[in-house]
Image 1 (spheres, rainbow, N blue to C red):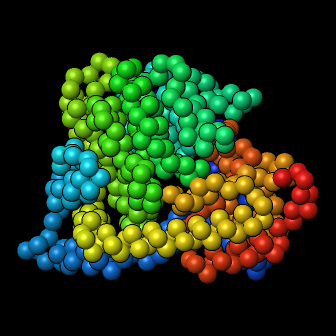
Image 2 (image 1 turned 90 degrees about the vertical axis):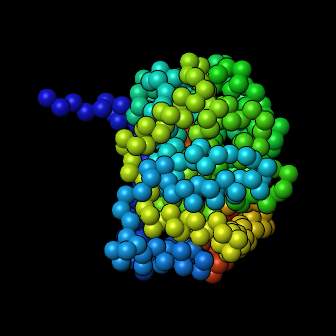
Image 3 (image 1 turned 180 degrees about the vertical axis):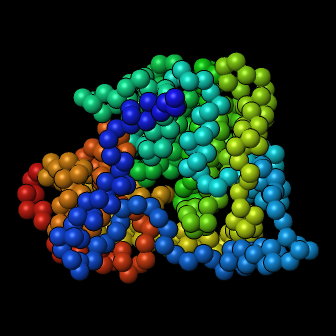
Length: 415
């Protein structure tokens, strides 16, 4: 008799983005013909840069001839692409080897799958608020016995709260943990840890033989040259950190699907030998993964050429101008706004004492604007809402005009 994985039943009811879609659909059914301004889910909107299109097109053409056709590739990823990533990291003073890169079909899957390297009873520390995949994948893996509805937390998980008064960057754990999930720049808050703050985590991990799982998917949005773009800019990080990154938000590959994970040879955990975790991840990829699309990898290689980098970064700058427009518009309404300077997300405190979902409904009903309730990212996200800078410029401008014209904030003294 087949039995289900009971851990799925532990997942808190309702996934954030489907719930947003459900409420949006209900509103449109009640108000047919209404246009909704979508500043919620972080999906890219602008066309791929010409250099990337050319790289994709050339690979497609190669598939059309027996002389240049290619089937399965290296499970670890195209060697030219991995070598290009080595050069990409050198620009930040980070020295890595090509075989320490594992090309994936996007950061999200690896962020979920990487925890399979570690035992089920590992103690997991997760930023709060955080992108849901870190929490949910560890619940499914059996690392939490139950969900505490009174607190909004999963039992046995250690939540590292990003507090407003501390710039939403959490402090290192005060107890012993085994795995630490960090997202920097952070989704959803837009906060970016500096070198000293990341050094604290690296020092902790080295002392306790913990492993940091570091999601750097938004690193290209950091414009402040004093802030780190990779955890490997911190001395000792190659001994204690796995870095995950993606072409999705940098080069517009949300639909193309391409990312990478770095598992350094030097990485060790409490009982592993040097190089063992690298070998384990290699074995895992060879067993469960046949490699990213050859076409997508050709596009990724094109994105890392000098021309591709210039064009991709121009698109990043476009989205960051959207962020500036959103930020200035919300500040003009005397709302408290964070982020949007080194990340494409803006973290906004809800006014009038409203909860995250109440403010979501207020924006939807009064302004026809969709944002993302902060509580969906964890208990510390309550009383905040996330705005995304991904969108066509005319739509961003129209959304902000609708908020300016229609959002009712009469109770000024309660903000």
